[in-house]
Length: 343
Image (cartoon, rainbow, N blue to C red):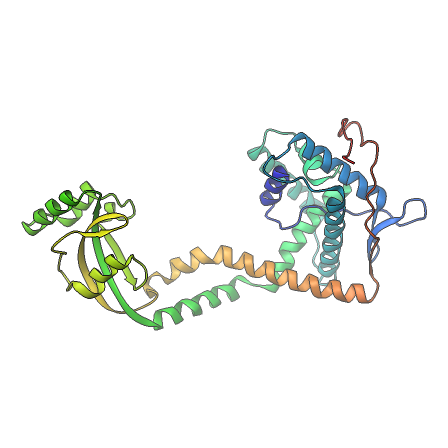
């Protein structure tokens, strides 16, 4: 199961399994239908067989293996989600060409090769439940991956999210609070801290002594400078020195003890400042944009799918058969010769 999770992370998807089948008939009844797309019970159970084989090959002792009933529900659910989304994309004239799907398959192949020594087709079988990379279901999975991305891009644009982040940062910059800029040298021994204070009072260089003695890796190579911060960012003993005890330019006359050790503190500045420095706005937008836009697009896609799914269900364009756990004797020998599902 751990390998399934790794593969899904690799694809940057929140969904594991999708499938598409043949027209329903009495011999091979449907497990699920979304408009004209059908997942037959035979296809469903074949995919689950392959998944179970993959999990037996690569068991994760830290995770409980899902039951066959749980896998059945998961595969069926993702079939529905995939095809609802593809139908939505089609309505909006969003699609993927054969060559684009080919390119996506190769992109996934390269990603697997970078992260695993396993054969790509075996990964497809063991971790996604498809026969191999030529399986029509896997190619439709790639189609789904592509159109989901393109549909999401129409719902939430980069310009929109950039403007939202900028507005948030500007509001933070306008919201002023008392902040202090301090520098410190952190050591474990009180006697050493006293010696450092004596050196500083005799003209020693704070930055040089911080680089030499401080055990704080986040500030020692920056002259001990902690930057501008508001109240509530440091332990009480440290905060009291910065906001109450010291004047700008002053050094603590004695070491300040905290749970981390002994601090030699110098107050570099204290003033009312915005909670964000507008000088850093472009870099901060650049840092936030990728994760924010991915989150927003995921949220909007989910809302769109939920609404369309409800509508399609009400109109009886989605049908899901009651879950039946079917234990099949084997899987395609060429793909998984030892496939024997657990009872």
